[in-house]
Length: 240
Image (cartoon, rainbow, N blue to C red):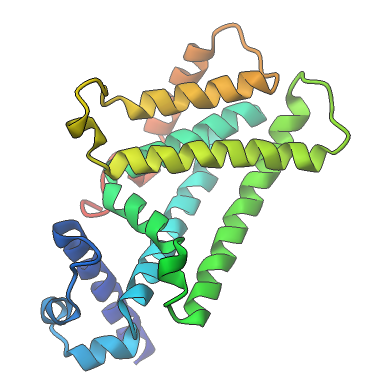
């Protein structure tokens, strides 16, 4: 029974994602979702009592997949800076191949959503976000310890500051992935991934990272990732 319930929930989330892609989260109708899943509205609500729960659950699912890829991505880097660039490339490619999931992830962190969702589900989501943040915080600490900038009195604060800078750039890159800004603004060149990585490199340089040929480093990391087993670098969640 438990396995059947889990399989049903996976199907619900799959169809919910497709519906969000078609009509958007706010116009998604629970009745239509039930029809696509072949279950009644009542049965659907027994799994996810509200639309906000669906979004939080999709956010968890998306973050779990992305986190797994982050953990694989760091393996191609030799130094802290290279590992950080690798994870940023993983994140950018994930958003590029799965723009709807990038939007869902950002929406799931909005107070307008999680304040209306089931507390237990929100706690699970927050626990996962904390785990991912701790993963990156250790990476920032390693990177920080390798850089040439003079050590500050509080290394912990330095690593956190670096992390917030990288995270802010990542949120902006995700937003560009699912927005139509490039279609509305003629002067905007749709090369947000390259711009994102360029700014990550500049941020690292500002923190003291130095290398004779940074473009070559990025290309080497990209090539290593392309030859890895990280699925989301090459195809969308739908294709997978």
